[in-house]
Length: 200
Image (cartoon, rainbow, N blue to C red):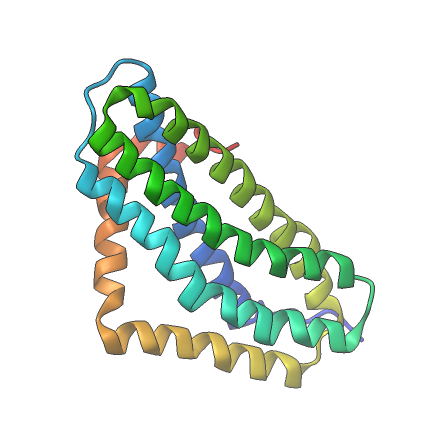
């Protein structure tokens, strides 16, 4: 089957959501590294907002559509990616657990003081390594194969599912909150987040 020339809407959405999530993670890295370098502790409300984003958005909006539509359709067309797709689905669940661990570590730092900071710093760095590697596999390994093997009918179904994400966010007013958070992150570290200096 020939490669589809036009980029499917769902792929564009996935890549945009990856970019947004990367911005949030980069913002978290910037904050903990700044504290490590001796900067004054940041407004922890912003840190909590970042943790809210990585807990709510990937689990409720992004990952379910990948698992239920993109990954499942790929498995119907080929078994060459079964191992990678199963690992990615497991990582979706692991990511949620890691995010909850970050929330607990932030609370310990907030109420326990500087002695609790090394644990928070370590978890943020681990989460960044984990998630950047996860997204890299999806974009460098899964998406190229999907573009080659999935049919127009497959993409129509997948595109419709991902467009429902956008409608849901608009209908509940969540898009404003997510975009407002992203703008705050960019304001905190504009050079670092725009240039990608914090990427692992």
